[in-house]
Length: 138
Image 1 (cartoon, rainbow, N blue to C red):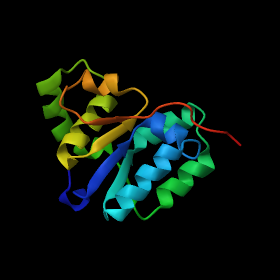
Image 2: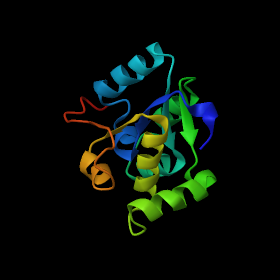
Image 3: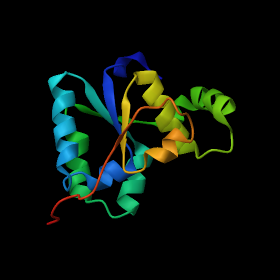
């Protein structure tokens, strides 16, 4: 992982990306991160998964363009991810393990509607649960 992104404080998983624009909590957290002059991150895999699950493409594009957001590429960290998987268990979901590894590396939080999936990988990971209701769509 590169040291240029050490300011990452919040990592959005696919569920948070799908909810972007429909959940006030996400906007509030993005604002808090910006006030701290830190970054919000999400992986290319999470973006793809969110889109496959019906996320609004135009909202995702707006999110990607925010100066306070950065896109992570799990496969550029393949050696670190391999070592992390050896430690936590190679049969885990690789992408979920990557988000946990990134949260540890950047000392950030994963915003997700399903914290248990990341806590199952390592109980020390810090997650912020994204709760319903997501608000009005439209």
